[in-house]
Image (cartoon, rainbow, N blue to C red; front, side):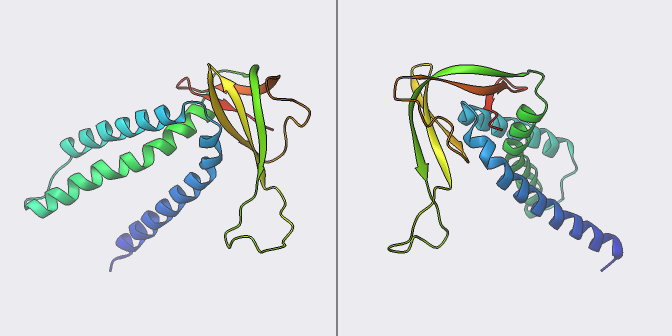
Length: 175
């Protein structure tokens, strides 16, 4: 194998690992983005369109297997990466300041997780808190590492730092 091929293979592996790490870090932001389902859907459609354009404009192989491999690569890779890119761009390239917005408070519940399960009799510490708020007449679930509203009762009002993203999707900005 040539040095050029080894270098390209190494860069491809590092790119895949980098994308996995970025996705793992971005999941906490997915959880605290309002209407994240639409952000992901729009990103998938953008990836499909981009992949189709790239596949159409690039050179195909001569045999059918080569063409199928070519099209599959150009369609699948952009669709896998675009939700990550969409969320990062929405959050990091926002031109809007963080604003304090008021929402109706529903409840705040602690949660604990363990990769290996909980042992009987083990003292369980909260790993974070699910915060349920009322936004536009429906209940939204947010996640926080610490308790945000210990004194607020159901039906009370809470103020949450929210930033409107580049694409208009609002992201909760806990400290």
